[in-house]
Length: 128
Image (cartoon, rainbow, N blue to C red; front, side, top):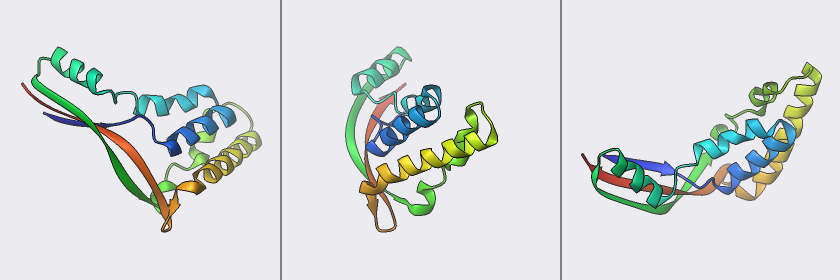
């Protein structure tokens, strides 16, 4: 078995998580922790051994990624904002505030019309 998982959360996702917590709700921001929770080498090895795998080897290495401008805008804040109760005007205001905060925070990662980020990838190889 070959398993690769990302984490911890790269800086742009931390920026997004903090903005979500401020502008929408801490519960909405929690999805970032869920996506990037399993990244510890020892934890991944333990889970695989507990699942009956043998010859488990895990390691973590950084991976540089370039995200196109189109892909980096696919997680539109307008689809996230309605997650919190309130009037349409309030949700639109939250979406605009969230978008401003995230776009501003992500500026330092802008590169070649997209975004460049580095994420650690923890990879494990195991046999059953």
